Amino acid sequence: MAKIFPGRMTHRREGELVVFMIGMRINRPWRPDQWLPAFMAMGPMLVELASDPTSGLLGCRFTLGAGGPVLVQYWASKEQLYSYASERDAAHRPAWAAFNSRARKAPGAVGIWHETYLVDSAESMYVGMPLSGLARATEHVPVVARTDRARDRMTGGRTEAEPRSA
Image (cartoon, rainbow, N blue to C red; front, side):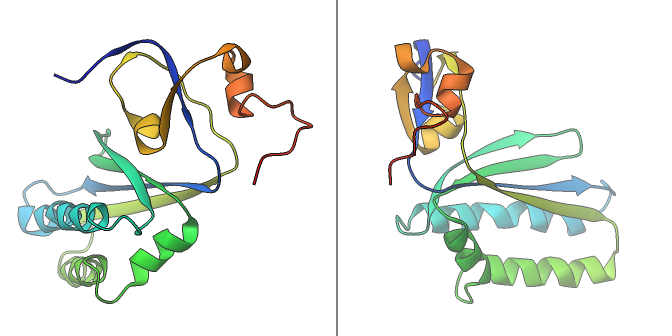
């Protein structure tokens, strides 16, 4: 069983942070020949990224949304995310080509989507939770007096006028 942190915890991250959300919607459940390969393609990509400490992937979280599976990924930079997406020898390119080939044969059977966010600042709170989400992907730290309020965590305990450290 995962270790539970009973106190108030948050995350800490200096530098660029990118949140990448990717998901799929199963529009025709009776067509597993269309949606199952798309679903199964993500595993090898995550293994590939996790095995390369220079990939830029900080961590991820899998959830089920109303329309289907959703993967939230945390990246060290948008350049590393874009680099992986376009790398010819990585698992992503052949998976994307295979998806497009299947989609041409059965348009609309499965939908895929993604959203990319370059995060200027982020706030988090975890109480009575195991290590998860942004805190798992970055640094898991206790809430202290200077980060007691959400507003304070959003600025990293700095006043709005104080610059971020480089």
